[in-house]
Length: 340
Image 1 (cartoon, rainbow, N blue to C red):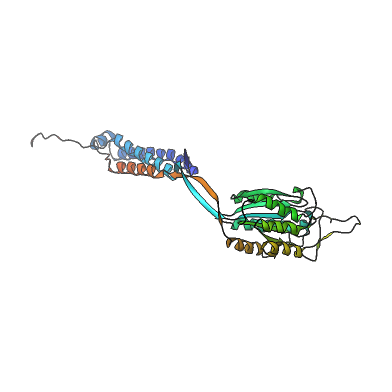
Image 2: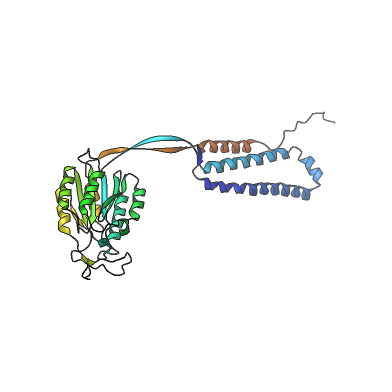
């Protein structure tokens, strides 16, 4: 298969007609100069050893060399070279709370936007670790399966929103359970769950799920996002109006740090509160970087091999031929004696 790495350089071929026009004008200018110097027929006889055909041939060689140079600049590539790339790392699942309480603005611009921004920066730091995403509210589901394609993970992260899950609530336990199901059940290490939430669990006893995660060898790092003092929950993403209970009182959502700390300690992880400096996920990354790695499989990719060298060699040969190719003919003179 043939391809060109810089196919846009083919536009330089438009210079060839200009070069042809320039050469034609140069030949005509030379003829006019000869006509001004003397009678044209006489000048042709005096320069009979100069061959117009050879001049045209030399110009053609230059044009052909220019074409090969442009083709070489476009970097033709052909064939494929298979390389095996082995990666070592751990499996990392990031569970993000997308419940309506994450719309609270005690962490600007909102708890959810803050969480997504931090996770995006976290993904950008990964080197060889597989990443997966879990979205949860009243239920949990895998938003992005474990992958080495960090670009795809960022796309899935970008579309996370409260309307992604119609079931209200914050079932932290179900998020942990979904992570347990997603990780390889045969392994008892190399598994990390980063849980980002305000911690207001509305489901079953979350510590039971944490204990099961510990048995499965999953280390859970929790990131609390929000304030312990609490903040009203906006009804919409735009922030207009606040959620109210049946008595008409504004619902206040508070960060539950106690539960998040228990989850992390149960599995050998750590708890962090989200900060303006976004240091918590950097610290989690540093913790992951010190963990024992496993081979996550190998990536095979095709790399086209450059073939521009051959075109460049042809161009140089043509230029060399043009340089040594004379435009004058060798005229043999016949000796007729001294007095002839």
